[in-house]
Amino acid sequence: GAGVSQSPSNKVTEKGKDVELRCDPISGHTALYWYRQSLGQGLEFLIYFQGNSAPDKSGLPSDRFSAERTGGSVSTLTIQRTQQEDSAVYLCASSLFTGGKGLAKNIQYFGAGTRLSVL
Amino acid sequence: DQQVKQNSPSLSVQEGRISILNCDYTNSMFDYFLWYKKYPAEGPTFLISISSIKDKNEDGRFTVFLNKSAKHLSLHIVPSQPGDSAVYFCAASANSGGSNYKLTFGKGTLLTVNP
Image 1 (cartoon, rainbow over the protein chains, first blue to last red):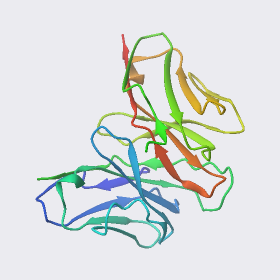
Image 2: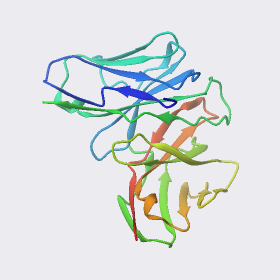
Image 3: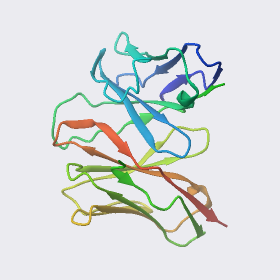
């Protein structure tokens, strides 16, 4: 398909286990983003990739969270030793944004998300 | 501290009437604003945007108004249709400040359009 693809769509795990979430962005989009939406909250920025580099990881909640992107395409978000407070919908987005300042439009296109439940 | 606020968690409107969704922001560095629509079990989809050099942007039934002095924007949908029923998120970015990659979202407003 032409949109952002995320897998799995749902993930149930036990507290303390590690999980990997995958994002396949729109072809040609150099920018990739991870957001998290907890129950009743807005989308919370986690990390931004430009190509394979992550200029801004400031939104990652703790060192249990990490992300990588390879080949300027697919990204994985890894959560180690999951906790119950990690339960949320994890959303990935991509865009044509190539960096730099100024009033450049940066319209981000989102996947359907991965709903993570930590028991 | 929430920098983008959508104070109405829900809004119910009759089909054919106007829907007005409101959004307030506190960060004066924000200069680009977007509205996203989200259906259940789907990702947010881009609807309309406005930059701070404008005070109005229109696209079909959707119009966004920006009042910079009040740090307030609104989305008008006219006429409202049942298919518009969804959660609407307001988002902002600080393009001139170099954080134009990062969107800051409100908590969303659930719009229900009744037939």
